[in-house]
Length: 382
Image 1 (cartoon, rainbow, N blue to C red):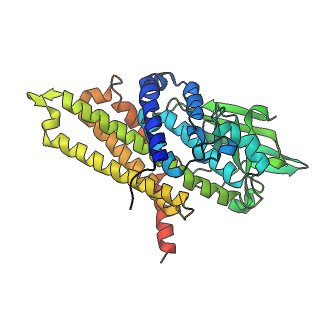
Image 2 (image 1 turned 60 degrees about the vertical axis):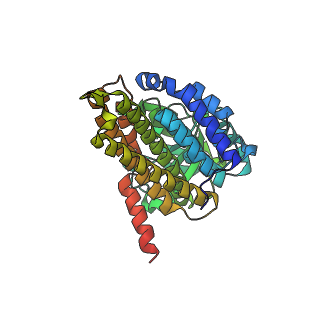
Image 3 (image 1 turned 90 degrees about the vertical axis):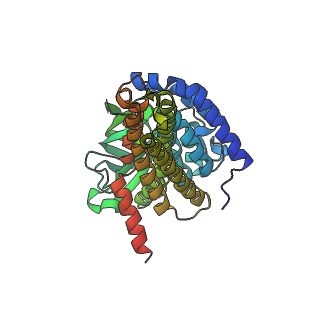
């Protein structure tokens, strides 16, 4: 196997890493403290092509590949996990379905401004009663003439408080389960009957807004249907496969930040007359963190390579997301432990990494669901 990057991939990785280190990392603590959406960062990342890495250039993207996307996501998330998830949603949960299933007109109108980073996108799937059970949607879309009339409430929608456009998962008939799921593109700023509900107070990723979206007889043009009726659930699953690569990369970036901070601190902190980095107990923690994070990155790159080569990557993306998020959480916990009492204080970033890492085990499909996906795929291959 060739683990080397192409000249273009290396150039993008270096460019994004420099930007993340010089412009994102210095304000990460402030973003976390103020819960401020980093709009200026999003616009600059858009100019760099990062808000639509694998989206074709004719629709505002950079026209690159998913391997490049993984490297960009890791670099950004290492600097600021909130910025990482904003980029991930733009690329994966919104960008992927519109690019993959949208008509030419839909892509020109609704994908171009998001992929170019001029505005944010979001994906509205989760409801109070439909999380892991993604087919149990209650949000209803009823076709009347040339419009869908939408009624329902979405919960925990990343970017929902700032997004201009949304891919909305709804049902045309709840009694038919997953067979009646459809996806609609919604212009949230210009849709009668739509309003933003509460913004969640969260443990981590605090600069990334997580909002409730409320639809009360909201009118969405029938022309905004993605694909055809009956295809919505399959579109959803394919989008989540792609999204899991993004969230796994976010997790890997958080873990790498925890490791680097712990390495620096361990060399500076002196106990019993010597740096704690000389103690085997600390060295073993650092060695395990580094090994597991490298393994996670390789799983992510394999899944990305498979997607780039149009192979079935459902199992591989689930493995990568599950493992990377579990590893990130372990790395973050060990990072806090290495910092000791300081790790529990906001003076250092260790506690932020731990708060940010936890959500990666939950969203884009809990890790319990990832294990279901992996096992189901394994059993179907026998």
